[in-house]
Image (cartoon, rainbow, N blue to C red):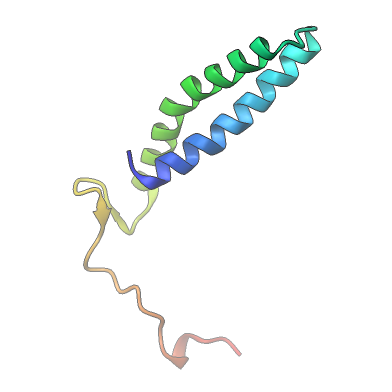
Length: 87
């Protein structure tokens, strides 16, 4: 798993866990076990969604080579000279 997928997974897991905890509190479940189950369910749900979102971001990026899973080597990524600067 690449770094982007890890970041997206943990970001999604916190958002999903927060939503599930709010739902469990709304339904009247205030125990530690309810919170633990919500966190475990969030991590299980967030793992495949993080991979999916990471792959979609890389697929849509024109500077990413999807076959090699690396940036395209032939792109000019340097800062341009003063000609591109807007004053």
